[in-house]
Picture 1 (spheres, helix red, strand yellow):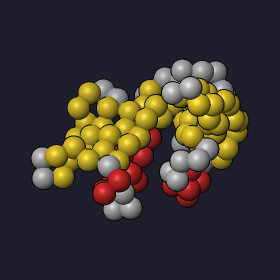
Picture 2 (cartoon, helix red, strand yellow):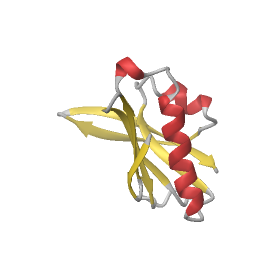
Picture 3 (tube, helix red, strand yellow):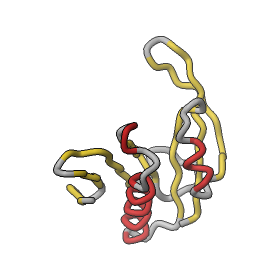
Length: 113
């Protein structure tokens, strides 16, 4: 895994990017002082520990900045919600978003770090 910028973490396998995570200051006031903006792992590389490593890297980065908590938004129907619950995420809010003309529900998960 490589850190390519101050807040972007990339997982590589044999020189090919297979996942990334990015974190930083919260984009909304939800009572958390950090946000996991995105975490993505190629489907073929999921369930191999890559997501956990990226998750830990993002938390380590936020802690290094003095953050005590973080949150993220994930689509309610996304199977990754189980990953976030397994990592101790606590649902704190829901909101509707529109993607491609379709209204979807997002769930906010939060952590004390």
